[in-house]
View 1 (cartoon, rainbow, N blue to C red):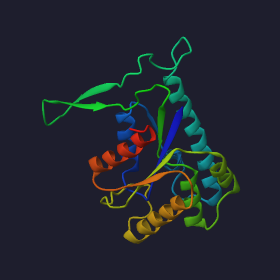
View 2 (tube, rainbow, N blue to C red):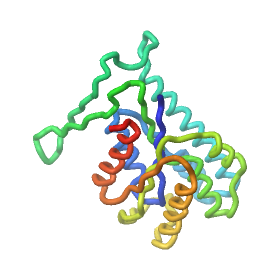
View 3 (cartoon, helix red, strand yellow):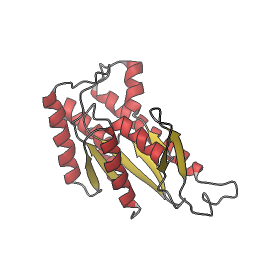
View 4 (cartoon, rainbow, N blue to C red):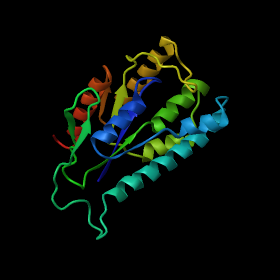
Length: 216
């Protein structure tokens, strides 16, 4: 079973970093934002219809990464993963210490696969409505038909980091968007967890939430 976890929140809240750290922890993939490459190619002067293009590109990218994760669990004989069902343990070298840093993947059953998503159609809806006061019906339809397993809401308590594509460096819109996302999560049925603190604390909270999906 492929479980999809979406990381959302205002700009500069460590979403992409958390996605990457979680993917490394669980030895899987994470799906980046299609919007970033689109804006780098086409510029920041986007229009309402451009957000529909970006939304469709995001769905296509999500499907591509979903299939990639599914294929990673298939063996040549058509069965899934390992017959042993053992947890995998990886060792990485700590640059400040000679002691290896062991991180255990919690995927003890190959039937459980994870994909971490840097955005979804709920985020596209917020983007459309916050900037243009309207949302494409196509995006609303995708929200209705695409289930996810968990949302991780990143709190804007990290320092702002300048980026050529970021639009809202001031605290007021960051807080506004955070509360928009929080209210949206409260009103839907998918489980969600607020993620706050420094990067390592964020990772620990996120791992605890994801492990909860496995009953660990």
